[in-house]
Length: 66
Image 1 (cartoon, rainbow, N blue to C red):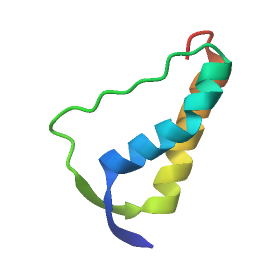
Image 2 (cartoon, helix red, strand yellow):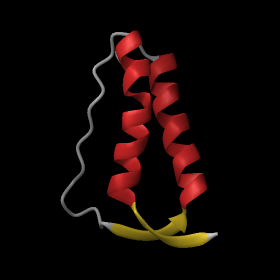
Image 3 (cartoon, rainbow, N blue to C red):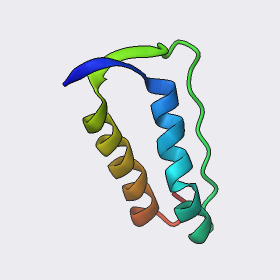
Image 4 (cartoon, rainbow, N blue to C red):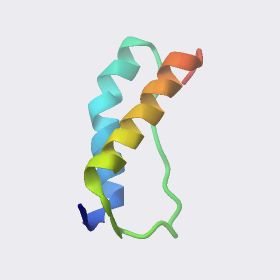
């Protein structure tokens, strides 16, 4: 279902969830968002969450430094 969502908060929440996994693997996890990224988007929140989790998890698994 497509709803308005705050993409910046979604990215922060996913990074917060994966912070401890990164720490366990001695990876510094930080992110930067360009100021032109809109605050609100219309999207499927569940799929955005799954996409971000998969993207970051793959970064941990397939590189030495994330």
